[in-house]
Length: 218
Image 1 (spheres, rainbow, N blue to C red):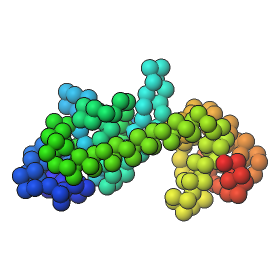
Image 2 (cartoon, rainbow, N blue to C red; image 1 turned 60 degrees about the vertical axis):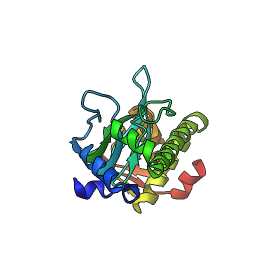
Image 3 (cartoon, one colour; image 1 turned 180 degrees about the vertical axis):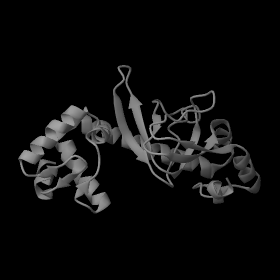
Image 4 (cartoon, one colour; image 1 turned 60 degrees about the horizontal axis):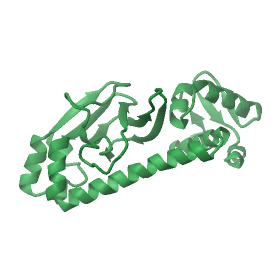
């Protein structure tokens, strides 16, 4: 536990008594791939810090449609799952593990108290919430204002730039989750891109053949 709480972004700004308070009110939990993150007997988790693996944050409509709004990787934090702490957050997000994932959780009651008494924790909270909320707005803008071929082309280019490789090893289902549409829609558009010589597909990978062509679509 000690090695993980020391990695919290605001750890060095806490007093000795506050550090001990965090130690007493934190836990490390491990989630299997596809598990929804839930508190023990409560939906409000508190502050989440990713130790290993990754999380997918999404919003779910009443009809069950999922919209991926951002992902969290090792060293990243989120408090959007704690609307009971930040009452200014007017929307609920759901966290699901994208792979076997280990997280540090500072429980919501303790985190709320830290925010009240420590200006550095409060500033961190609002900065983090603002950053994640901006991700929500960006995703909604993409869905509302851009055609799907543009969104998919941008996703393929961005993924290649992040990995430094032209091969993308992802299932069509996983891509559909990232670009917020159905698997069938992704399959049809990838087939169109393949027919146009922009990508090449096999069972496990998608190879980008013409980045300039995809960028023109964007």
